[in-house]
Every structure is written in C-alpha cells, then in structure tokens.
Amino acid sequence: MGEGAALKLEVVALTDIGCKRTNNEDSFGYDLATEVFVVCDGMGGMAAGETASGTAVRELVEEFCRQAATGAPREECLYQSILHANRQVYSLAQANAELRGMGTTMVSACVDGRRILIGNVGDSRAYFLRGGACAQITNDHSFVAEQVRKGSMNAEEAGASPFQSLITRAIGTAESVEPDIFTGEVEPGDILLLTTDGLTRYADAKAIARLILASPNLAGACQALIDTAKQHGAVDNVTCLLLQFLDEEAEGTDDEKAA
Image (cartoon, rainbow, N blue to C red; front, side, top):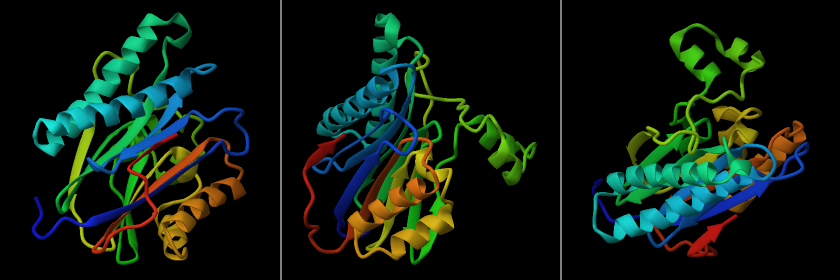
C-alpha cells in the first residue's frame, strides 16, 4: 500500500446510446463505500448485450463488497470478483437459449489506500492522467491490438482494419477467463478514466487529456468526452467513468450508482 493518508474520491459517470444504435449495451456501476468501479460493453443479439453488461456490473460490485468484508487483500478481491462475474454471465447464457453466446468487455478498478488496482477483460480501457499527461493503462484483448503488439500490423493499418471490433477475450463467453491486473500509486489530483471503445475509436490519449483538462469539473469532462464521440458520428454506445483523487472531501456523489 502506498504511504500517506487515503485520498478522497470524486466520481462521475455517463453513458449515451450514441448516434447509430437503437439500444445501449454499455453499463457502469460503482460503490463508494468499498471504492470499486466498473464499466462494461456488452455484445450479443437482441437484449443479450444489455443483459451481459448489466449482469457483469451488478455481480462484480456485489461480489467485491462480499470479498472486501472478509478482509482479503483488495487485489485478490478484484481478481476473484471478475472471475465471479464471468461465471454468472456464462451460467445465465447457458441457461437461456436466447442469451447463448452473449458476453461483455469489462474494465474495473478499486482503491487500496494510495494504490489504484485495475482489472480488464476485452477492449474497454483505463487511462491515467497526471500533471497534464495521459497514458493508456490497459492492453486491449482484441485481434488488431494483438497484431500491433506482435509487430504484424501498424497503428494506421489497425485503424483501417475491418476486424477492429473482434475481441479475443470477454466476460461470459467461456466458463473461465483470465483478467489482466495493473497496479499503481496515486497522488492528489490524479484522474482515472474507465471507458468503452465507443469513445476510444475517436479519441486517443492526447485528445482525452485535452478534453478533460479544458473542462471546469468532472461532470463537464465526462460530457465533453461523450460529445466528442457523438460529433464524430458515435456508431457505438459511449460510456465514461471519471474518478479523481482529492485531498479534501468530495461533494455531490452518491454512495452507489449503476446504469
């Protein structure tokens, strides 16, 4: 755990159907009491995508609260909660033929004193902002991202690929899944963004930093990010969750929120 007193948190999250879709398959949720946060982007026909993402969000938050109450290390709580959410979505799909094959991406985070722990499955991302600089923390579990990491495809080719939406790891599509877990130290003023690819296909880390820094508050920053995606056509749903670490008491937040 990092040194120093735990920091206060301010959180704002918004989701938007975008410009082309007829339903919103994104979901987000958080619990400030246990300091856990999650964003999911569902996939599947009819209502299956919404069911997958909504179930994954609910199950992760509820399981994390149960795990945290045992006093287990928070990294283990997050890891086990992701596995639990995967099992629940998979079981639901297996039990209902209309939901068969559904799944969802997941990017999640929890706070451990002066540390932030991030877990992801799929191509929803976490970005970290400090001192005007912004960096992508997570690695996409997608075909094009893996080709770029292997050196088989450059960024320009990846951006033009017809396989951009092909993810290689997801919550609920198999009985088991292996999430990536990242850890880092936090300082007052740091900002974490959890977001779906409805934003990141239109805004890179520099654009994200510019939009957030130009906004008067987190709510304005969240709206600016979504507005940018919509200005570019927003062919997918767009969800952004912003978390800021503060020295003083945050105002205007709820203990728990989900959509």
